[in-house]
Structures are given as structure tokens and as C-alpha cells.
Amino acid sequence: MYPNLHAGITGKSDICKTMPAVMPTPKLAHAYVPFQQLVCIYPPMKGLAAGTIFPELDRPYGADPEYTVDA
Amino acid sequence: MWVYEKKLEYPVKIKNPNPRMAKYIITQYGGPDGELAASLRYLSQRFSMPTNEARAILNDIGTEELAHLEIIGSIVHQLTKGVPADILEKEGLGAYYSDHDHAVYPVSASGVPFTAAYLQSKGDPIADLYEDLAAEQKARATYENLINLADDPDVIEPLKFLRAREIVHFQRFGEALRIVEDKLNEKKFYITKPINKA
Amino acid sequence: MDQNQENLLKEVMAADFTVTDLMLYLDTHPCDQNAIALYNYSVQRSLMLRQEYERLYGPIIAQLTPSKFPWQWVQGEWPWEKL
Image (cartoon, rainbow over all chains, first blue to last red; front, side, top):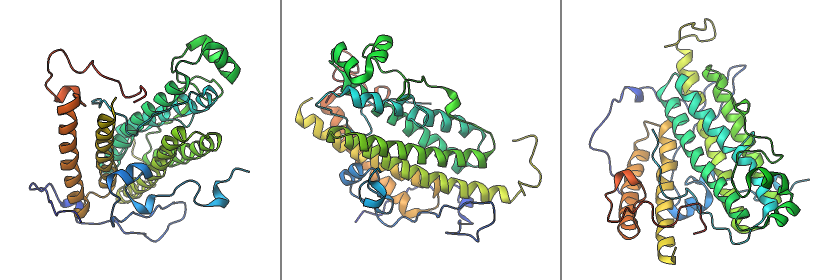
């Protein structure tokens, strides 16, 4: 869908030697948010309307009736 | 440093004034879980973060929150523009009008002026990131309350945008927390807390 | 603001928003090459749309844009006014 435009200049890549695990073994007294993994993105106008370009983070208010109606 | 762009991050074009909603929405300008608190919190915490990723995310989300502050200010401004004093009073903005006329001033929905007590910059990166996660949830919940109170689509659309941003920010702070914890684990952080921090 | 200006500004907003959301993603995923490629494409698209907008309607960032006479930055609507 999008052309493969890699930047000509490569920076330091030592930071990329150890990639973080998607989900490590949980330790007590720690909380974990899983890493998002980019798959694809919305086109710009749709992204702006949704408030995010990532479909997996698009959680519209009103989608889940149990959660969204105020008591 | 900061540079200003002559556009909002999301468009605000409100056709019908509504002082009653302005009184509630202003809480995201100067209230405890609002955009001013968020931007000052993140932009202050970034100085004591131990990794580049955490510094970057606090810097960039803090900057985006200033853009959100501007959106809320624009909404409040458009909801009260041109409304005469007696209508403002009838809709609950009499006290605000007395001190501020039609200006935008950082207060909560109940009129409490903004205070730095709404934020913390603890210097402990773990504590700071948990504070940021909580802040994003509180902001999301507040936007949901405001959406429940509103009925004008011109008002609801920007509120929905701002709510969606809080969810994304929460995810980013969660990832920053993972990165910081990984890095601090290398130094056995919890066993000896360093007295001199680099 | 006339409809053409409003529409083009919305295109710029949408293009810039894509850049912003990708920037935040990259801050916590600095090693995601696909994301960097997407980001670079989005930045180029944003620059192209901005140039078009600024050519017709004046600067978006004052300090990056030469001005015609009289000083363009003070003219026109400010973003918080009703469009």
C-alpha cells in the first residue's frame, strides 16, 4: 500500500540489539502493558475522525452498551 | 523549545452557543484531570527520566497535551461567544462572568482555580509513569462524562477525539514503563536506590 | 474562511495527525523499520499538503516561512475562531 521509503542515513543501531519481549514472565508487584505491534494504519481522514491511526487502539465510546451508558 | 502552528490538532466549529456545557467542559482546561495538568506533569517529569524512549514520549505527549489545551479553550470560547450576561447567569456562569467576563480562565467545573497540586513529578521514574497511566485514565473517564452531558454533535466530535487520544497515550506510557523497568532491572534498582542520579 | 480553505486545512490536519500518532509509536518502538518507512512517507505527504496550503493562504509556522507584504502572520483567522 505504501512505498518502501527507508531513510538514507542510519543512526546508532545498538539500541536495536535486544528487542523487548511482547510479554515477559510477570513478577509480583509489577504491572505490564503489552507492546503494540504495528500491522496497518487508517487513511489520514479516517484516522483523524477516529482519534487514532491504529485500528487496534480504536475503542469508540458507545460501542459497548454495558460500559458506556451512565447509570 | 516550542513552535506554534496556526491550526488546531482537530477542528472545532460550534454553531450554537451553550454556556451550560462551557461550564462543564472548562474542567479539561483548568481542572484536576485536564490538559494543562497533563502537559505540565509530563513536561516536568521528562527531566528526570533515565532512558531516551521515556524522555521522548514524555516530551512528545506533553507537547500534544498543549495542543489539546488549545482545543478545549477553543470549545469554551465558542460556546460562550456573544452570549449576553443574563443568559450566562441563568446557565450557571454568573460567578465566572463576574471575574472573567467572556474570557477563558483555568478552573475546574466547580470553579476551583488550577493548582500544581493536581500533578506530581516525583523523580522516581516508576512512580512518575504510574501517575501518568492514572492521569490518562482519569482524563478518559472525564471525557466520557462530558460526552454523556453533551448533545450537540459539534461538541461531541472533538470530545470523542480527545477521549481517543487518552487511550493511545495510556498505551504509550505502558510501553515506556516496560522499557524503563527493563533498563532499571539491569542495575538492580530496588536493592540500592542511587543517591546521586546522573 | 471559505470552504476550499477549510477543506485543505482539514487535509493538512489529517496528514499531520498521522505523523503525530506514528511519532508517538516510534518513540516506544525505535527499531520498527516498517513504521519508520510509513513515517517518512507520511511526513513527505504532510509537507506537500502544507506547501499547497501556505502557497494559497499564508504561513502555518511563522518562523519557517518568508512573508509577503504586509506581514502575513497577523492576518486571517486564528484557529480558535469559528472557521
